Amino acid sequence: MDIRVADTDADAAMYAATLVAEWLRGAIDRRGSAAVAFSGGSTPVAMLECLGSLDVPWTAVQVFQVDERCVPDLDPTRNARLLDLLGAPQENLHLMPVTAPDLAAACERHALELPDRFDVVHLGLGDDGHTASWPPGDGVVDVEADVALSGEYRGTVRMTLTPRVVNRARRRLMLVAGVSKAAAVSRWLLDDDSQPVSRLRRNDTVIVLDRAAASGLPPQG
Image (cartoon, rainbow, N blue to C red; front, top):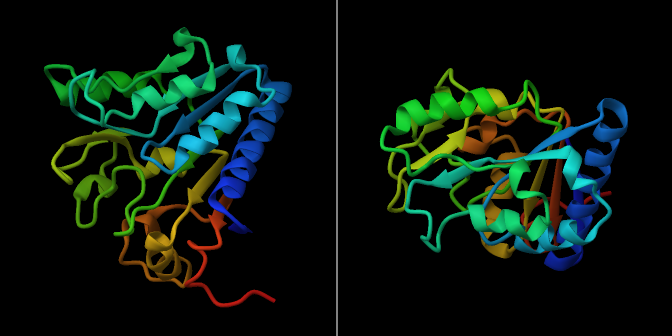
C-alpha cells in the first residue's frame, strides 16, 4: 500500500487524476485498451473534472461504475451523471442497470460486461468505514459473484462491484478528503479490520489523502 498526502482537497484531486491518467495511458500502450471503474459521491467530482482535462485517449477506455443507487434514471442522487465529466464516448460508458425490473438478473448480466481484470478501480471511503457499496454488517462483501446488491443503506438499495472483482484489479486508487473521514482512515490504516474497507487488498493500492483526512494518522518520518 502506498499512502500519499496532499495539502488540500483540490491538490489531492489533481494528484489522483494524474495517477489514473498515467495508469490508463500505460495500459493502452501495453494492451491497446484500458478498463476503469469509478465510485460516486461528492469527493470524486473534482478528480473527474481534472481527469477530463488531461490527455487520456478515452476512445480506447471502457468506463464502468463501482456502485450505483437503485433509483430512477433522473434521480439527482445517481452516480451515473458524474461520468459525463470525463468526456468519454457514450458508447464506452457501461452504466449499472439499476432500473431493471429484475435486479438480481441485471447483476448477472452486467457482470458479463466486465473486463476479466480492471486496470484501475477508483474508490472512496465513508465516515463509517464503507467503500464501494459495502455497508457495515452487510453480507454483500462475502458474495461470490462480481456484481451484487447490498441491503438498503441510507435509504436505498445499491448495486455494487464486490470485493473479489475490485481486488482482482491491477491497481486501486482510493481518494479521501475531509476531517470527517479522518477517524475511518486511521482505523483502517492502523489495522482495525472491523470496517468494510478492510476487505480491500492492500497490494497495488494507492491512497491519496488531503491533510484533513490524514489528521488522525501518526506523524510520518
